[in-house]
Length: 165
Image 1: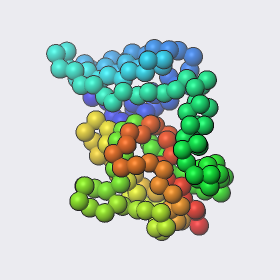
Image 2: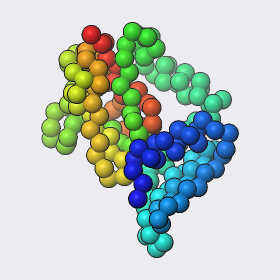
Image 3: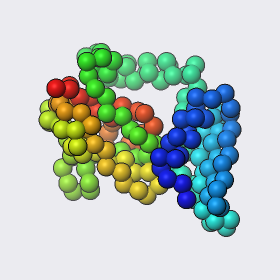
Image 4: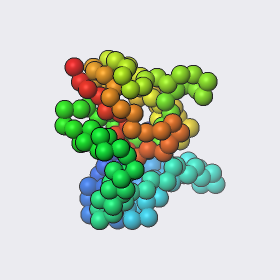
């Protein structure tokens, strides 16, 4: 079985290369990546197949369209904040589902205006039934939460904006 970090590294390498399809198999576990129709699967045993969340990436030509759509939906003041170089972005280290709290009955780990430290847990990203606690890795104040609870997130997608101290 592959570790999440290994899969992340493979995704980075394939993404930065010119190849469109990649298959890697070790000890009965298999990872298959396709750039255009991005499909990620992992096979643990020949008869039992576990399908990982489907990774969808926009083609470079489509990226500006997606960004402009989001800017139109957001208030005019939010657009400059996302691109503000003085703000630190806490990004998702993996593809998965974003959760603001440890369970539905609990309050969110952090919200806009909260102070965070380097090791403060800000959210959970669930990937393949594993719940990964995401730490702030910066000291400062949460300016904005960019993702809604239960939303799918991509690798490297900004989750929070932090005014670093």
